[in-house]
Image (tube, rainbow, N blue to C red; front, side, top):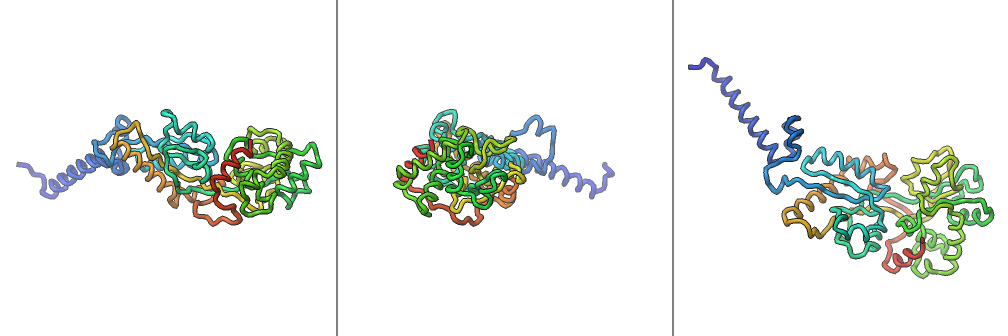
Amino acid sequence: MTNTPLRNRLLFGFYVTLTLFVGLAALIWPGFRTLAYAPVRDLFFPNVFLPTRASTPVTLSVAAPPALEAWVKAGAAEFTRQNPFVQVEVTQLRGLDANRRLNTLSGQADVWIAEVDFARVAAGAIPYQAQGAPLAQDVFLWVAVKSRSELAGNLGWQTVARAAQSNPQFRVAMPPANSLEGLAACWLAAADYHQSPAPSAAQVADPAFKQWLAALLLAAPDRSRSPRDQLSTRPPQADAGLILSSDWNQLSPEAFNSQPPALNVVFNYPYYIRNNWPNLQPDEITAHQQAAASFQAYLLGAESQARLADYGLQRASAPMQNQLPALEDAMIRALQVCWQ
């Protein structure tokens, strides 16, 4: 007969029961792995769970634009730490490449984050939601080297165009050709040229405007590189440029003056979830949809939104002023032939 006190036997039984419960729960619900710390198990069996639908391991593929890529990758790392059954892989994708890249078998990202709302229309018939939830906000910003004192406090389309016309050595850095930033820049230029807060497709196609814009773009030395890269060299490749506001923290404020355009375009980075997975089984599709929705909720959460400021971006809910209205299909078609 044992001499072990009854209290000790009860405590031992409780401990064994609790250990078995937590160990089993860690196999059924991945969230319990943060409670049931077991480095040897996680090393050899990092993604092994009992086959319940709620814990089906998922590799979530996310295509993001360059301006948002670093923030999304940081969020993906933290999201995966909190949800070990979901691995998020982030790849870079520019919006005007969406139609070509997202319609191939090798490019079927579960989530596409575009630069701006009208990217979805420009992408055409791709298998993604028609509407996406905005994740962040960014706008254009004019900058000029401080040696161009005549532009200090007077930066804009007209003053930059006059400087380029009067000085053959004047150089301007503009968004790359065949980019969504370029399409947005053309839209903004048309609004300024015609002094209209809502320019029409006919105004974008106006021969006088197109001639004026073409003359300005002759002063752009490199239409294949981002304006930030051109301005961040020493010395800068250009005297002035139109950049994204999120690029400003990568330039030296001692070397440049900055000024937002009177009217602006808001890049709101909408989050589109795929609505057709032809190569997955129904239960796998459900798991991918749930993972995509969970990652979207995480990126819109308070912690992720607070981190946007570290990347020069604004929260998705931040109020914006002096922005151009939503684009119609006819305007999008006009812009696609404007900035080439």
